[in-house]
Image 1 (cartoon, rainbow, N blue to C red):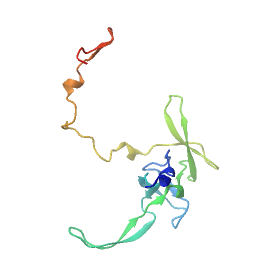
Image 2: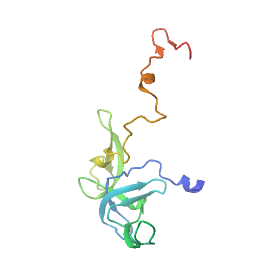
Image 3: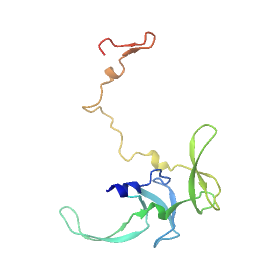
Image 4: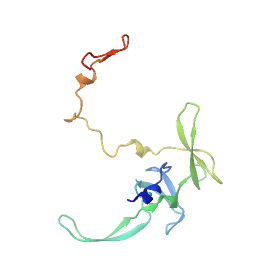
Length: 159
């Protein structure tokens, strides 16, 4: 990717995986669906069951060839998040609640201003965390070792 293309990448994404969105341009205009995948390096999203294209796949070792229907990515500017109250496409803004938590709210013409909840699918990790310690992990006895005395303000003598 060249420097010109890198300048045009979306820095603050307001669409996340699992959002209910409406397609506002293209052959599936007016249809709603869930975001299946977000490709941030290309400013694109894949909507579940929308923007279907035929893909010709050559037969290879271990898989069969043929013509398959796959979901093609859409540009992020061609989809808008659906307002949970009105069911119409809206812009997404952020607000801070009284307890200090950051939430997404619907904004724009005809928007209700209601909170857009974070999708439940985001709580599920795509790659699970490792449960066993690897060769480059620090052992627990070294992690729990006390190396600083706050009363004297001194660290270990060997450091």
